[in-house]
Length: 239
Length: 273
Image (cartoon, rainbow over all chains, first blue to last red; front, side):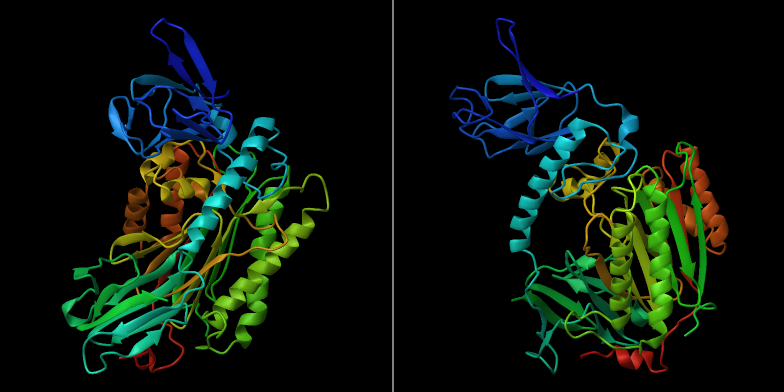
């Protein structure tokens, strides 16, 4: 059961656009999958990303905005019956949905392979799976260019007797602080470096980032964050 | 160091109410402080084979190689402790075995598994995972998910299309983007952290977290923190009460005592300052 967008003209004519591609673009310019030739619609207005049974609408920086059920959206997970407005035009998202049982089982998206595990036995799924993976891989390639992979992470003391001293974070786990006063850990995960409160000492002091206490959960560190542990300030940066 | 008296461990796995077979596998070694959980998938019979082979291989490998590893050493190329590298190697071997096994018959073709494994040593932990089976930590009454799912849902959450609550309602819930045994090589996410007395760790398959909200998991563990066997039973029962749509597995571990390798643990902590 393929999801679709349906535009009904003022004359009552129904124009259906099946969402068969992993990305369906909407806009005024030719080249869009759904071309709406009207000035109220931007050249590249919005796109719908379809992944198996679900579709997601994303505004592409349009002038007049993209609305769903009257609300301005940037990104929106579409539900059957949603009314999408682009400029003066309205489309309805129709998706009766798949049999829920098919998707309870954990399945693998297999990179670069033609088929799914035997159980799937569904050509639709096979095809979609290949596309999702291509989309994810290209997004990941773009994302990793800006990640901390391949970069050195460092801490530099900003205060105290050793101000100016620099430590390169070479280990997966680095502990900082003073036992009995305050202890924290910096752990390296695939997503980046995280600061974790370990021991608050007699006053239960929690580490601060940018002046605010970090709470009990791991706190992701961003380039140039100023950390404070045991009264000492230091800067986290990557290079 | 024998960790048997330092850690309290309880594990339970259940077929659930809908599936005909249980393709999850769990295992642990309380002397070594090693916990492994795997959720198998694919192939007509493959899920069970993939997950049990993975759990057995990892436990065997760590039992063989860990005792020889001196504590407190770091692999300079990667920054990981040698204990972490040991886990990583064990996972790679498991991947190799499952991948080869899957070529042995049509009923095994396409089989794979998630895996999440936790190793305790010297007041620290190494945590490795592939897929959407998870590790949580309860510390000071707060629960935190330590692993990030390799799943389509997580990708969509990261890209801003879903909040975690909305993702639970999606039909595409169970698509993993990484698994063990489906490719000749694999790379697991690997991290290290400090461990405190009183911490409680939970490894679980998505059969649990798809059916019970995190808050309820947290309350159940807190209520039964002195009796982990009962906590595990309660979690499985609640998941089944909510439909039991998938296999459900949990391993719980409570840190009863410090387990540092040397007396001067706090001295070792002064890395810098």
